[in-house]
Length: 109
Image (cartoon, rainbow, N blue to C red):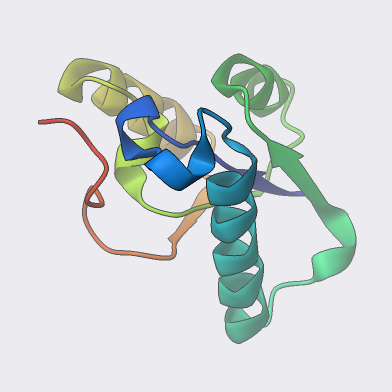
């Protein structure tokens, strides 16, 4: 199955969002779906995640073949956590597709 991981950092919210993650998550979801279509990936087996723990629970159960996200920096808040997550994904041979290269503008350095 193709997992789509959606995450918006709190500091990315604008005044117009009024504390709600709904609009930025919808924007990210649409970007990921567009990227999936551009890559010719089968859309019938897509599962959306907003919880990293739920995502990695399915990774550990070998349910995920491909992971799509806005940018790689969405996977973890720290470099150490990111390296651990990437190790797990590579060990399980999960294809990673990112809409944007790098860590994205929202990642806190």
